[in-house]
Image (cartoon, rainbow, N blue to C red; front, side, top):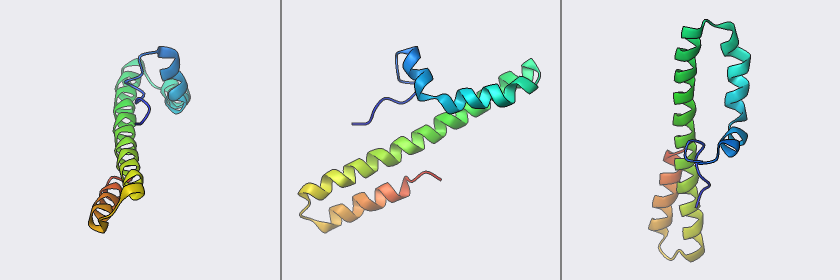
Length: 92
């Protein structure tokens, strides 16, 4: 099992600890913008972080499934399918 995603973590303190790049980005770049643009840019960047996290977690889960299958694998076709599935879910 994978740890929870940032948005699924119920404790605020842990979410903050899990997302330092988001905080650093906002402090560095959003402060220079007007409040309306800050809100829009912040929302767009947050959505991008969520997409990236989903892609990363998808790859991680597929890779974990592949590695677990290696232990008990008897059919190479299963391994090939799991390996290919993990490769298709890589982060771009």
